[in-house]
Image (cartoon, rainbow, N blue to C red; front, side, top):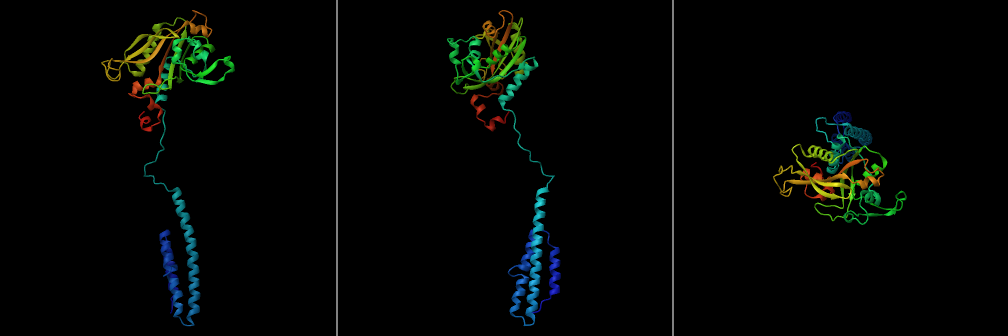
Length: 345
């Protein structure tokens, strides 16, 4: 059988020029090196070839197979490299970008920041303190001795350790942020104005409105001739800044060991405008904080000269403020880490 080797070589060169990708290269391989390809056909023709033709067919078949195999391997490596580079640098600028999901501050952190920002604008300084406190700072200095009835509701989680600087007193998780006020008054002479945010711990059973851990913000203003009217004016500005200018405020007499006189602060319901709804219990008012004038016993505990200074103090629960402002009915949801809830704020 005669083969036109010149024509075969010309056809191979022509097919080489048409190879653009891996698919066309595979078609080229199958055409020439496949089981039914040209080289296989040339080898099969040896059975019918004459003695003179066999050496020529065998030699040419081997040469063509070797040349095609060498070309195929080189071309395959080149195409793979090109495709790899193309995948690395190829960017479709017409496609919309895929932005990473950004986090944001927790709703309680936002509320703390909002409250502190209001008082900072009024001249207060934000102070923080340790969550593990001494009995003196947490109770005694705040006019809550060991036999005081109100101590039962605040006697919290004691720590099995002794603080050498505490002169042997027991340590506990603070039940309020007021101990930081004691620390500030021990360290500085008036005038001073601080707000103290942070976690506090109490032996409360967990339900929709109570938690053994929650966040508090307390404020303290001490100077000469601070009056109860200053307290009322300060809190009036705060409530209007946080809840709106239409908010009304009222004081109700109350008792706190560390203030005298003391009061609970209510605001008119911002939802029903004081008419009565399910949020305010149909009475038109919402309780938001406690306050009062600093008790003289507290000043004595920190070493201030009796009668030299007066001061005002107030405290509020961050969770309660957030629940009232945003219509949240269960305190436990703040700590569930459910993004369906958190992403709303």
